[in-house]
Every structure is written in C-alpha cells, then in structure tokens.
Length: 183
Ligand SMILES: [Zn+2]
Image 1 (cartoon, protein in one colour):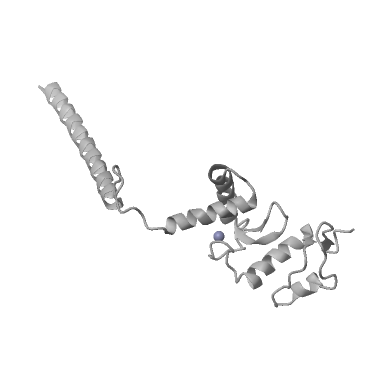
Image 2: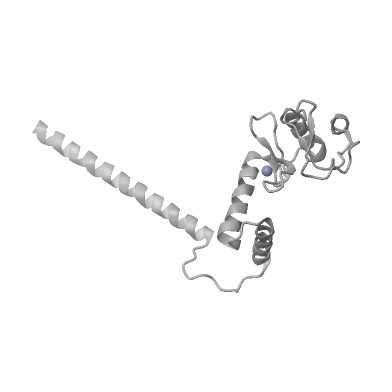
C-alpha cells in the first residue's frame, strides 16, 4: 500500500464506499461525504485541514465556535479520537489542549474511569449539575466580586500611603542631617 497516492484504506475498518474519490471531492466546494474511514495520508493533511476549516466549519473552531486564523503558525490543529483514530475536526491549539485536559480530569478525578462512555456520562452530569438551581444560601467565607475588588483597591491604597509616608520620613531625616552639618 503506498502512502503517496494521498489515501490509504484503513484495513481495520470496513470500506463502505470504495468508489468515493476523496481527492476529487476535496477539489469541489461541496461538503464531503463520509468517506468510510480511510486513513488520511500525512501529505494530504495540510490541504485537508484548510478545506475542512473553510468549507465544513465556516472558518470556526469546532469546539469554541470562534474564528481560527490559519495564517498564524500552529493556531489550527487537526483533532482526532485517540481511541478510534477518527479525525473529529479542526480546533484551536488551545481548545485541543483544553479538550484533552478536560477529558483526562473528568475520567481520572471525576468518573474514576477513563473509558469514553464514562467520561461522556460524567461531563453530562457535570453540566446538568451546573444547570440545576442552587440551595439559596451563601457560603460563609464567600466574598462577592465587587467587595473583593474594593478590598484589594483599599489594600493597594494603604500600601501606597505607607510608601509615601516612609519616603517623607526619609526626606525629613536627610534634611535634618543637612541642617545639622550646616550649623
Ligand atoms: Zn477554539
């Protein structure tokens, strides 16, 4: 099997459409048919990424929905499912990294089970939990954002006042010393 024809059949997956010409389909602006799990060659990756982002995703990241600027080096990455190998879409590098971390944390800390089904179930439960109304009481040590901001401003102002007082005292001592030398 050669790699340089751009496509490889993935022998572990059933080939549903042997006649589907991915390369020809990529040259058109039409959405691609699901090409039945063929392996994309390394050589075709860059062209596939540009096409996928522009035509299938409208220029937007498949997770956050914000624009991906491919003129920036390394901003857009091709994300794949590490269990099946199937490509899922083009993401921001940062979104790809977030996805991997969220999956790992949800599996290892949350579900205590790294299987894709357990991770998905945990994330669904987490979102449902966030959407649920709270208990209507405020946590004892909670400080609201406005108060926290005011407190930190007060602290900064107090520190600045202190600095100014010390500078003033140092100046006064210097002046006193000078006055004594003149006497
Ligand atoms: Zn993104």
